[in-house]
Length: 340
Image (cartoon, rainbow, N blue to C red; front, top):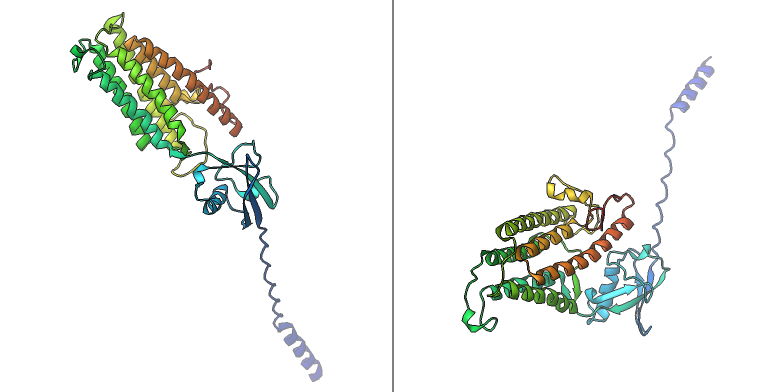
């Protein structure tokens, strides 16, 4: 009996014995990083310019440009254009090396974009020039018209109104450049500033010369024509400003993520329902109003040329929107609803 009780007691104690602790898992081995070897070749001469060893796969094109700049100080990153093919499309600065269709040994073709200048500087130069040039003709500075007209003033009130509208337009553009526009591209070739400024400055001088000329003839339908044109001009200026604010709010500071612009609570933005680039639509409307107001042939010619250029730009942006966004509204036209 005692032996049986003792055996049962020992069996119970064996059951209560703690379970053995599990062995700790061995630490995971760190993933092996596969470094890239990057070769930079001149796109024209096919000469090898630089060989970068052990480039991290998460490096961006901008990082590679910075490394290239260290070896070649004369080519700063904004001046460089890197391609996968000598005649291919330039790679974006934010492109990541490991996501590109290249092996661990990557070859990039380099092109010199020439001296660069900030976009903001170009925009300001485009606006300051016409603003000052027009005022020179408005105040009739010497050597513009006959000496007897130096520093005289026009007797037609539409001439003074036209000067105010023209100045308002370019002051608005200057303020928008400084405080509203968020420019995705930091620089542009320096040579473009001469081309762009020549376009705006020469047209401003041509328009101002005839509008402020002592022999200028007011519009045929008089005050009614001028007032109607003024309403069109101001309406489109407010609309253009509203669109620029809406586009600014679409992007966060420093972000390059693109989104589809949509109408907001502001009624001037409802045109987004029908047009991809309503800022150009309103800009065109402003110059149509200015043309009707002044009834001046150089202004009409400037409006037509501007319409052609803005149509080209709007079509390009509209095409990019449709490529980047599968759900992009099909009802929208580039610049003119249902027409163009």
